[in-house]
Amino acid sequence: MSMIAAVLVAALVVSSLLFVLNLSHRSSPGSSAKPIGGLNTLPTLLSFHMIDASTGWALTGQAVLRTTDGGVHWKNVTPAGTTLTQDSIADFPTASIASIGT
Image (cartoon, rainbow, N blue to C red):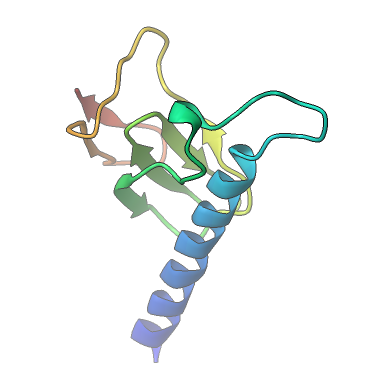
């Protein structure tokens, strides 16, 4: 039973992440802002790891993201000066440490 619950929580978190990323790339009314590259697409999810039911990490080719509320909100925690690509890799050993290779 706990395996089913874990799968359902993971599916919910991934869905929340995709929803949040989609919202963050939409232009507000009257704005000329467009998603990167002018395409209306979500960034590719390169790595994803939930430490527990609340805290998790995600890596895209554009940002390192962290949630502390089960995926409802995601904060961009990319270190200043870091250039990410589609080839970037990540290891998320704890709730407060992320190791990124670019």
